[in-house]
Image 1 (tube, rainbow, N blue to C red):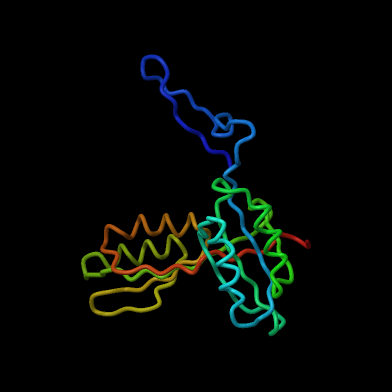
Image 2: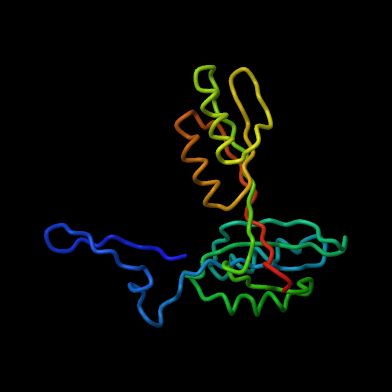
Length: 189
C-alpha cells in the first residue's frame, strides 16, 4: 500500500511525496505485525502471552482467540505496530513459553484478514431508509430492529469497518463492538 502526503511548496502548490521517501534509514519501519500464535488450549496461556507483551511495552492493537481444527490447540491472532519496538526479541521470548507451539509473523500483503463489528444506531422513521441503504452498500447485515434502533453487522477489513462507522456515526451511533482481526496466509503456504 503506497501512501502519499501533500507537502506545500512555493506559492502554496502541493507536491506529492511518498511516505517511504520520508523514512530515515535505520529507523523502525512502523510495519503492522499480524502474529498468528498456536498454543495449547490450557488456562492461563493467554494471560502469559499478554503479560509478555505488556512487560516489553507493546500495545496490542487487536486480539482474537479461537479454537482450531484440533480441540487441544487454540489460535491467538494479534496485531501490533512495529514502530514502537522491534518485534524479534519478543517473538523469541514467546517461543520459550511452555504452551506456545508455533508463531508466525504474517506479512500483511500475503494474508487475508477480516474483522467483524456490530453497530447499534438510532433509527427514527425518517432516517431508517438511509441506514438500510448504507448497510446494502457495505454488504452489511441488519441483525436486530426495534422501534428506535437497528443493529448492523459488518464484516471485512479494518478500513471497511472504519469507513462504515464514519458513514453511520452522524445518524446516531449508540454502541459499537469490534472483534479484532483474524488472518490466514493466502494460497497454499
